[in-house]
Image 1 (cartoon, one colour):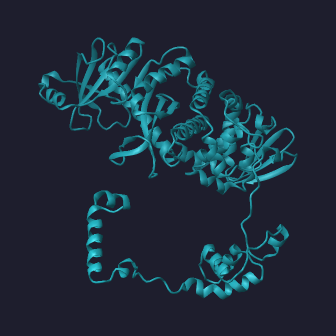
Image 2 (tube, rainbow, N blue to C red; image 1 turned 180 degrees about the vertical axis):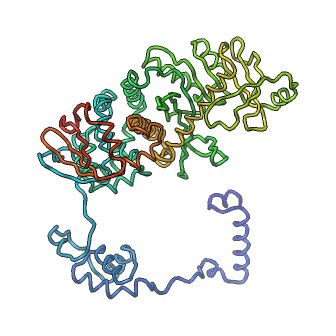
Length: 549
């Protein structure tokens, strides 16, 4: 009986109940009734019956199903096109033959405008052409792009492109979402008729959401890694020449789909594990510029990301980083030993076990030293510490341990470093800057919507993370050129400078951007972003001129 129940899709108890009832009906001579369903079927369809005559009348006038649905809606009848199709089929109406565009226009129903097909060959760069845009501030980034040599970097990275949408235009179209605070791929459809934004990307109009979403699946990790190398190498001599101290951190990008084969990672904001894509970031501590990212991080190789970054930086500069700052669980003691052998200083946090806490709290008061951390706006400036050399498993030699108290937490903090020469005060002060990468990741989530554009494929997320690094860099470079806004985040810069109406005029030699009058225009004008910028290659080598009233 058990086998039969499983084969028919019943539990054993349900199947036993069916057998019992069947035997009871058989004894009473009611065998046929046992197989008859007593569930009453619906006799009428009120929604369809109300509009039946209206639908028949409109079909006799050669209206399509969707036309009938729209006209019924104007009269207050909300009904699906499937229901209308069933009515017409029941009444014996055949399907309409395909109509010409002229016949479709003759039907007096308001229809949405259909945007142009995205095609770089349809881009109009004729002398005197004028377009308007709600996001005129995007053109502030064009001089920065030309300084970076974006098209050369994209070409060297071998990103895919087509005759209709070249690689650099595809990257810029995807990047627009990041730069103007759009949450999802589908929101690019809001810009289907904004010819100014299309001109920014070197296209007649921006591509649709399906095009940019599918584009990310055509990229590879090697393309993204090459892009980051070329990009950081280009800004190294100008901005990152003195970069020595780097903040490292990981961030899980949660996936909200039900069906997913992703690994589960701890999400601190939710207090539990979720299926997610684990990402890794490296940031220059002084300039707060993100220098490296990877979204193809798995649990089995998570601890190796630190070593991958130091090799990445060596390929760019020719030497290893000087200092690395990161939290606990980011790597292993064995990898810390490798960093020490490469001559790289590190500061990290040691996991607090019950025995360590017990030993630290049992220390006499005389064992604790005190120092003052003169970090601006720091709440807890007086810190007590114990500085001792220790040995840990899988680490060759001794490592320096700092046990810290009075940091605003009840339990002591255990800090590990291989920097033997620096004072405890300098080490504590230096590690306090690691919070900058957490703030930067917060910006990536809140403004660049790193979590909202996630996928169930790490490949797709890796491209999204790479464009996030580029967008963050662009805002950092723009902020550095605006007097008084050097330390401002992207959200404020977007509101003050990017979200600005403008009229764009194309001439034979230039693209002139006429901005509307705004209170912050003098700051951008004083920055003179367009004075020394090279021509824009994807706009037929035209220069950009920013003009303010």
